[in-house]
Length: 72
Image (cartoon, rainbow, N blue to C red; front, side, top):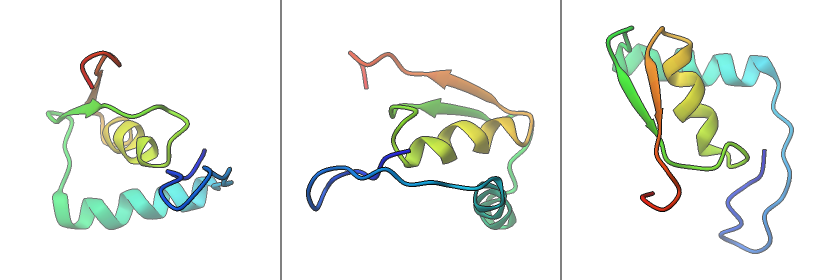
């Protein structure tokens, strides 16, 4: 994935599965996601926040709605 580039040019970053699982476990403790949840995915899959948008929904059985670029 790539960082946002807010402080310069976007940089590539490697994430392990363990990193993603830890993110989801930590957020789930506060948010209690369920299979009834619907998540919007507004960012490019190459952007760091998209990891949370996509896998946050899928890991807990929720649904992802990909928002078209011209709307997002």
